Every structure is written in C-alpha cells, then in structure tokens.
Image (cartoon, rainbow over all chains, first blue to last red; front, side, top):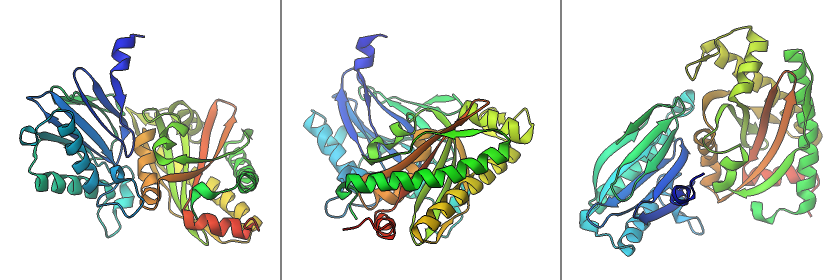
Length: 164
Length: 204
C-alpha cells in the first residue's frame, strides 16, 4: 500500500466536515439520502466537504454538523480560516438519493429531496454559486472530492463512475 | 431516555431478550430455506451514529438490506442485511433462479422474496420479544435496497439523528450452510428503549 496517497485520503463520515488544501482527497463512502456539500476556493486552492444527515437547524445540544443550515455555514467559516475567500467560493452538491422507493409515497417529500433543497437554499442565502450537482435517484454514491481543483468523482454500487 | 445513560445490566438484559427473539427468527428462516441456521451471541452497543456504518461492515460494501419500521408499544427501525454473495446464495435456494442479480439490480421476484424473508424474520423476532415483555410489537411493511451499506444505513439513522447523536444497536449475526450469512439489527427509538426496559422490569 502506498502510504503517501493513503495519508491524504480523509474520510468524511455522517455528520462530519473536513477542510483541506494541497493534494488531499476528501472521501464520503456510501452517501445515501444524506447530502454531500463540497465548497472550494479555486484561487487559494482550499476546500472542504460536509456530510449532512438532516435538513434544518439543530436543537439545543445537537451536533450542528448534522443539520444543513449550520453545517454549510460552519463549512464556509472553516474554509475562510484555512485561507479561502468567500467571494471566490464555488459549490458542488451530491447525494440525496431515495434508497427505498415506496417510502417516498407518503404525503411528505422523501428525505433525500428535502436534504438537497435545504442545502441549495442555504448556499443561495450565503451567495455561493452552485457549479455542479449529482443528486437524487435511487442509488448510493461514494464521493471523492479534490479540494484543490474542485473536481468530484462519483462512484455508485454498480461501479459506474462520473466526474463533475 | 438517553442512550448514554444505559447501564451494563440493562445491556445484558437486552442482549438476552434479543437472543431469544433471534432464536425464533432463525428457526423460521431454517424452515424457510430447509437448512440449519446458526446464531452468534447478539451484540448490544451504544455507538455514535457516525460509527454505525462500520458496524454493518463498512460504508462501501454492497449489501441487500431489508428495512422495516417497528410500530406498537415500542418504536424503532429494523434492518436485515445480507452481503452480496449471501443474498445470491439465499435467493438461489429459495427461488431456484439463476439471475437474481441483474447487473447490480435485484429482479422483481428476488426483491419480493427478500421482503417476505424480512417479514418472517422480523415477525418471529418481534412476537418472541413482545411475548417476553408483554408488549405489542408490530413490524411495518418491508422495503428492499441492494446498495452500499452506508447509503442504506444513513436512511435508517434519520429518525435517530433527529433526536440525538447516539444509536443503540442490537445486532445478531447468523450463518448457515451453504454460505449464507447476514445481520439482524434493531435500533429502538430513545423513548421506546425506556418502554422496553420498563416492560422487562429493568428500570430502577
């Protein structure tokens, strides 16, 4: 195993957020109805990704990184702290699948859709442009984000890959 | 009830209750496939939700997941998971069908058979557990997904995630011949944990 490449792969698990620069790769394995938000500043080559479980904002005592409203804001602040500038920031949004199709047939919208809508609304409020999306559907995704270039590789359970 | 406040003797009792419930489920499954199914001793853990995908075998491993909600006196989520190879083996036994996995998508018959397995196992488990605790436990309609474990799990964590950062995972591994292995998970809601513990006379 090549230790130097392994060292730069940083896992972003449910309700976690990571920010990095240089040749690091941020990876979320098996993203289902969760939303993955990647924000990067191409000029300063810094970026980060959040793996968000739920739409809205946390109640007292809850982890803010679990919820769309707070997680996106914290992500932006952390990128600024690492040398990024808000006016340069671009965003890519992934995830929000509907894993169990019948479960969306109730009156309310599937949670995956609600997660993506909440994240997009939050990015709009912050004035961050969304340059690419790979959202919805019925399949889980593994997401590899290169914060330095903003490139995202998406892989599904069939082994199909795409780059956004 | 906060999962962080649960005592070791309560975890032991949940393990025992689960062992009995799963014993009934394994018997039902043995009869269904016509061969012996054995169980490992259940594990009962309180984990941060961020670690739950690891318990299921890693976020990217491909599993067939049968998901049901638990209704009645106690509520929660039930997941029955089979690794890819096992589900093909299992459905082969049940359906005598060669092509259950059509390029990563389960055939309609295969998905339907899995739902039925979910019904039978969850039903056997719930009724044993309900009898033991004098609670009415009703399994909901099963849903099936054939995908990455992490993607299936994150859906199940939504209910729990909206009320806390911890999950109580009651897990039993079962295995049989030919090579069929799987996991049965029960994730009770925090409020329902209290109901279960009270029913078992396990609250101080």
